[in-house]
Structures are given as structure tokens and as C-alpha cells.
Amino acid sequence: LTSLRYPNLKRSGYSALTDKDLSVFEKLIPGRVLTGSSELDGYNTDWLKTCRGSSQVVLRPKTTEEVSAILKYCNERKLAVVPQGGNTGLVGGSVPVFDEIVISTQLMNQIISLDEISGTLVCEAGCILGNLSDHVAESGLIMPLDLGAKGSCHIGGNLATNAGGLRLLRYGSLHGSVLGLEAVLASGEVVDCLSTLRKDNTGYDVKQLFIGSEGTLGLITKASILCPQKPNAVNVAFLGCDSFERVLDIFKESKMKLGEILSAFEFLDADAIAVARDNLKLSIPIDDTFPFYVLIESSGSDGAHDEEKMNRFLEDMMNRGYVIDGTVASEPAKIQYIWSVRERIAEGLMHDGYCYKYDVSLPLSHYYGLVEAVRKRTQGNTTRVIGYGHVGDSNLHLNATSPEYSQTTMDLLEPFLYDWVAKHRGSVSAEHGLGFKKRDFIYHSKSESAVRIMNQMKQVLDPNGILNPYKLLPTVIR
Ligand code: FAD
Ligand code: MLT
Ligand code: ZN
Image 1 (cartoon, rainbow, N blue to C red):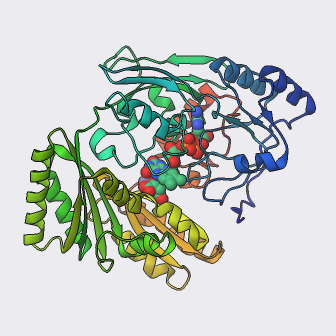
Image 2: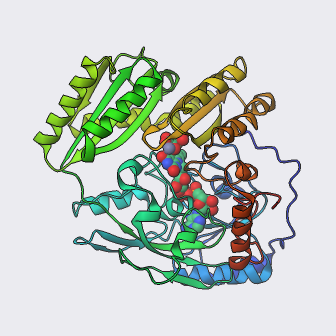
Image 3: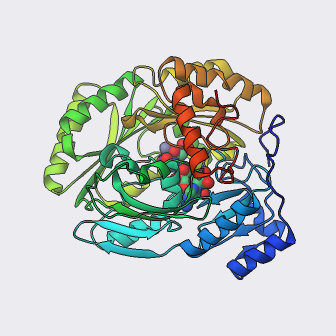
């Protein structure tokens, strides 16, 4: 296991865990206090296997009241904690840096209600996104977000990171589709914002503070979410084209020609396709020699109408030479297979050894330029540099790999890559958050005044700084 090196970081002055603390926890949540290093290994290590903490204890509350009692005690004792959901986060935010106590939402997994008419789902924070999708599907609804980690990520983790994913283009961000939430502050106070209303302009919208706060302002315990209607007809096209300019041409045309039925627009470059083919042994649905691939999904209410629209659009794209080859699917199994080629890239990259993962927003005119610049700069120091992602949201996933962590490669990547993004007016974190790995690059995307307000919010809601220390906020506040 390769660990991130942080020689300059010192453990802050939190208390150290004692046997007395453990016996208090055991009284608060009997039988749900995990100790013992082998049991704790998975909770201490992140999904990318690049960050590793050394927590001595994992607490698994079942109710908001238990979370409240735990946090109240930790706050009084000045014990630092890290909230953890499915531990699929990609910025080192979900695992301890030193010996912070892990509070896992694994056992807070009850669905509370589903209003089929309004489409409002109320559930606990530890529900797994894929389980929620299956549940709401029985009522003809879908979750407003979908991502490759759906089999393990928790809805609380999704809210805490303001996860984007594959459906954002159509259904917008969680800042829009979350109607309410309940969170527990460091003091143990329960903040009840669990509204199920679509419209509610009574003062500041406090729930928004917790969406994207990465466990630094409170522990989210419940959420109410607006679920869209499940579309009757879905079509997925997988297309090959010969330049990135063509990818953008196809995007522009798809917005015009598919209009309201366009539900996803993703891209992969040839090196990303090689990951699916060589590392995951997936067969590529069309010829695997194109420099760029596009995945377009349409979702609507009328199968015949949508299919005709999609076919007309594709015919036009082929006639104009924008698309060289393609396939289109309307059967669920084929649709799922095509999606898996895109969704499993993150998994496939791990087969190379170490993955340097970047998730940026860039104006589309500069979008692929970053991949070319990084490839040139790191030539000979990486196994591959690939570009893929949610191009329809101007969100690029740039990933480099090498057999193992190399400081030389890291020094070539950072801060070069972040400087390039800032120079082109992008964001250093489009959807994964800042966590532990990116917090000191916050000023590349946010003004000093904005960061100062964030810090003030942290002081108000968590004055002792026990909630997820060393994450999101930079080491130095300017
Ligand atoms: P964790 O990893 O456990 O935690 C993430 C952060 O949230 C941590 O800072 C943690 O402290 C905090 N947190 C967790 N639960 C709570 C809570 N209840 N209250 C307060 N804070 C909490 N992300 C995207 O945005 N889009 C994608 O398309 C996408 N695809 C992915 C695909 C794969 C294969 C993988 C591995 C990851 C992907 N991610 C994606 C990243 C990740 O899945 C998301 O960030 C997800 O939302 C994290 O949920 P989680 O439950 O695993 O949270
Ligand atoms: C994705 O879109 O596949 C995820 O955000 C994961 C990744 O960036 O690798
Ligand atoms: Zn993504």
C-alpha cells in the first residue's frame, strides 16, 4: 500500500482515545464499537489506496440520537472524528489522517417514506444509492443522481460531497434535488431541516451548507430527495469520432436535435478505451481505433418518437462526417453494457498500480488541452495519461497512472496541472470535493474572501474543529 507523504503536517492538539472513552461508547451504542486493527483496516484506507489513517475505533450508530450523544461526548472530550459513508470518496476525505474516530453510517440504512405522487423520498444517510434506486424504481421513479460507485456509496456521502455523476446534465445538482436534510453538529445539536417542500423561502436555506461540506460542518443523518419520473424510453448511442473538436460539434448538435430527451453526454479518449479493453477485458462496442468516443443517452416518454429522433440525429452526424462509426441500443442489457464501459474506467485504472486522479472543470474550448499538456509533460514518467468524463457538464477526469507512487511524477503533475486549470478559469475540483488531497489548492478556484467566510462558518458550527480535521479548508487561511 502506497501512502501519501505528509511530512509537514502535525497532528492538532486533540485528545487521545482512552479505555474510558471506549467504555462510554460501548454504553452509548452497545455492540457497535469496533476495535482491532484487522477489522479497522477497511475503514482506515481509502478506495484509491492512497490515504491511510490509524484510527483505533469505528462507531456504528443506528439513530440520530446516538449520533448526537457520540458527538456531544467527543466535542466535550476534544476527540476528533471523521464521518464515513461508503468510503468511495476519491480525495482522501473519508478516512482518518491520524487517529480520528470513524463514525460510520453503515447501520443508518432505513427508508422512511416515499410519496409516489410528489416523488419525495425520505431516508437515512446510510442508505446505499443503488438500493435507493431499486426501491424508487418499484414506484416508477429514479434517483436524480447516478454514479459508478452506486453499489457502495451512501446517500449521506453523496450529499456531503455534492456528488455530480452521470445524470447531472439532465436533473441538475443535489443543491436542487435535495429538499431537506437532518444533520448533527459537533456539539450534538440536531439541525432539523428535513423539509419535503419544493418551495420554502423562509429565510436562509441552511440545508445547503451541509451539501458539499465533506463532513466538516455536521454529520448528515437523514435526507429528503425529489425523485424524477422513470423514463419509459431510453436509448444509448456509443460513437467514434476523429478529433476532440468533433466531440464538441456532436455535443452542440445533440442539444439542438435531441433537445429535451438528451439525458447524458459523456466522452472517453483512446487511452481510456484501452483501460476498458486491456485492464478490464471489456469488448468495445465499436471499432477500438478511434481517438475519441462519445456516449449519448436519451430518456423520454415515447419510445417510437425518441428512437426516431435519435436515429435522425445520428444519420445527420454520420452524413456530416462528425461521427465515423457508432452503435445505438434500446434494450436494457445492451444499454447497461455500454454504460459499464464508461462507468468502470476508475476501477480499470487501479490495475495499473498507482492512480493520480484529477477532476476538473474547464471551459470547453480548453477542455482537452489539459490532457495534451499533461501527457507531454509527464512523457516517460507514466504508464498512461487518460481523459474521460462528463463533457456535457464541462467536467474532465484526467488520470495518470504508474506502477507505484513516484514523487518525480507527482512533482511534474502538481502544481503544474492546477496552475493550468486556474489560468484557464477552471475549477480544481468539479465534483469529487477537496478532502485531504486538494485542500491546499482551494485558492486556485476560490477567492480569499470566500475561503475566509468558509472558515468563519466552520468556527460557528464546529468551534473545537473536531469534525473531519485536515480536510477541505486549507492549512493556512489567508
Ligand atoms: P465517503 O467516501 O464515505 O465520504 C466522502 C466524504 O463525505 C468524506 O469527507 C466524509 O467525511 C463525508 N461524509 C460521508 N458521509 C457523511 C455524512 N453522513 N455526513 C457528513 N459527512 C459525510 N463522484 C462524483 O461526484 N461523480 C461520479 O460520477 C463519481 N463516480 C465514482 C465512481 C467510482 C467507481 C468511485 C469509487 C467513486 C466515484 N465518485 C464519484 C466519488 C464518490 O463515490 C462520491 O464522492 C460519493 O458521493 C461518496 O459517497 P460515500 O458514501 O462513499 O462517501
Ligand atoms: C467517474 O465519472 O467515473 C467518476 O467521477 C470516477 C472517476 O473520476 O474516476
Ligand atoms: Zn465523474
